[in-house]
Image (cartoon, rainbow, N blue to C red; front, side, top):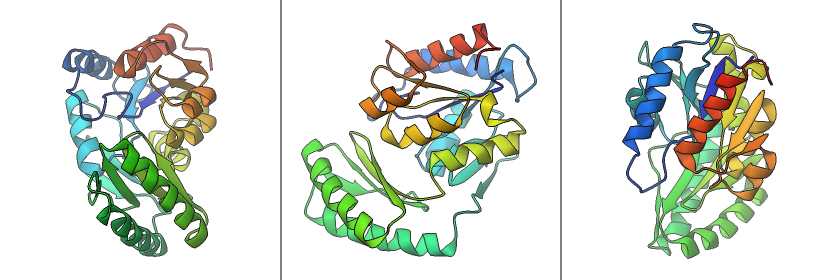
Length: 251
């Protein structure tokens, strides 16, 4: 039985740089209110978020959806509890990781200096991240950054979307964040469903009970998902929730 339904934000609940689909978010918010916390309703799994976005963005989205279940930011390096308004960092986010992320961020700053279409995301603490609307600049930066990280910081992962690059420490990916959330919510990993759309979500898909990807997901995410929707972003998320709700015993 799925007791906790977790979704990424970008590419799933919303599309970057596009207006929120407030009518569809309202539908999900209604479901979140009805479901409550994990186990409150046998017929409705609780709803949460696991996103690479920073604390402030995930906290705001938690408020939009009226969530009661803890949510994960920076790919699971941080957890926010909407009820207590308390946030905490994963035990794997050590001083050594902070120092390595600072070093990677300095290299990113050198890369961005020659690419006006990109900018550093200074809102993140546990990741070195950049974003921008120039696809050509992003792909060029991705090659340089991924090669440099592999040579200088083995064990760190370089993930990307069509508008961002995130370098994440091993042990602080979504694959480690979801078990932390599961332990906090007192559910098993088999009782979690996850919706993701990029290569940074593949690890999370492999460790949870059920996995979904929207039609707009990248090829790696769609290949890893147990179910690929014909719908995009939040339409696919609502469809995935309906599938779980209507077949609660299927894992």
